Length: 301
Image 1 (cartoon, rainbow, N blue to C red):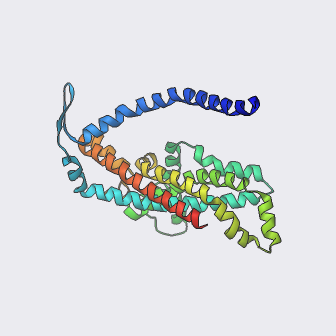
Image 2: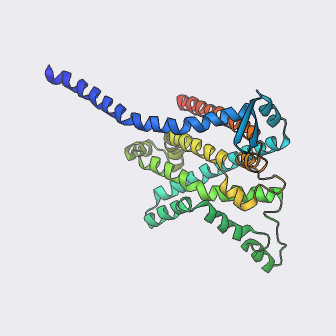
Image 3: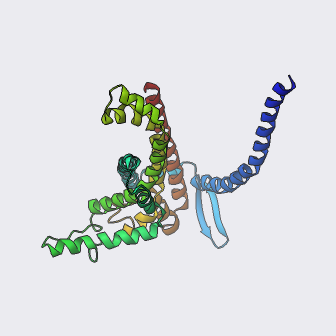
């Protein structure tokens, strides 16, 4: 009787100890986040003047948000971001899934394949941008040099709207597909081989196993990495800024760079803060819809 009661007590003590150990971290994290967030909210609902002694605030209500939502450049940035996120998320999920499936079946050169798939993700964005700039630059880019050597016309890859967006999408997919690969390869490794053997004994071929067993089991991992990639796509800044600076004519300006331009270049502090809050709200809605759809698919499966 004493032994039976002791186990729940020990579990409660361990849970209490874990909660106490986690509390300082939570307090520290909230303290770091609370002040910046409160200042962004304050700026979003204020008219701000920058004087010799710092910021001076005057309440403006929703004026900043109304001004932002009537600004064509804001909607251009939102449209660019939606297109960029859809293309990069779908592209990286597809490429990462294919790579994970191939590497999972590999026998020869398996360690080399795993390392090659991972290394793009560990390169700093500034190095990635420089690498791809040397490939797609209209003047010194390798692709145009190859095209000219075959008598083909050079392309204005980074100087035209569609070309510049195409380049930054390709760069982002190349850079961050390894993140998807790691998620999905780990999920594939956790699938019980006995389940696959049972499917083969029931007469399923490799395509049938992939469609009816492997992919349904990968849905949680795909959804998780999809959320990560959506967030990464919305907040991307480095590569876009270094490759195109948001140009030409705002064709590759995403919401992150629009906020940066308003805040640091145009000194539109209230507008930048209001747009930031709007982007956070829209991102939360998108992620909630994504997770709801994933849950519904999981129930049907």
